[in-house]
Length: 306
Ligand SMILES: [Zn+2]
Image (cartoon, rainbow, N blue to C red; front, top):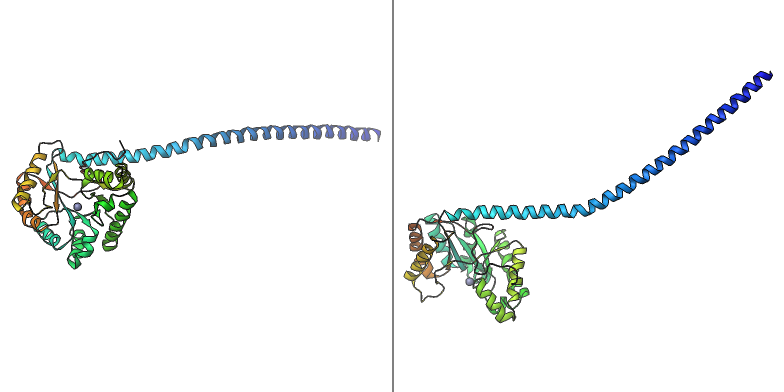
């Protein structure tokens, strides 16, 4: 009996030592795991901090890549004009009954052109003006923004005034066609627009504000490099033809053999147009429309204030 009780006591002592040791070991493990977790959490936080720093840099790099890709696409689109002589017929200040005649001539010659239209002209021109807008779109020409009111003292009096007018013509064209133009020609061209801003807004800075916002909003501003001087009846049909053809010819010796020919929505232009087309074609030039990312000519190249 004594032996059995002694054995039981011994067993109890051994068990308590083993259990105690196990518990001691468990708590040591927990301590170790907790420390490991703490280190892991600290690493996690420092990784997150690094991610927070790097993420915007990655986004910036992707945005830069997108801009560069667009630039490369634009350069690829333009480089073709170094070897391929091309004329861009542009008609400002429409639309009217004259535009319908211009469209008929273009159709007969299977040529597409670019129309920089004026809001008050569209609204005051009755059904012919509205029909012309629809035909410009339906017949594959480019509908582009000129102004709602072709009034220099008004639109160039401030950037706000310019964009109030700009939004009116953009909205009108969208309402009429469901199409949002992305090509813009400033009334009187960029060089005169800058002077007018100096005159009517009191600072040429306003011009740069206008042009930077147009570009930031995704519009392309295009002037011309051949002036037919058809906005005044004193020029006459023969001289319009001569101005267009001789102007286009001078572009053939330039780096980019591209002639952006400025014409207007006038009766004399209608009378001159077939001869202009024939004369330009005889120079070996093809005809294209102005497009965003395509050929651009600007009197003032900078969008930023000098
Ligand atoms: Zn104009």
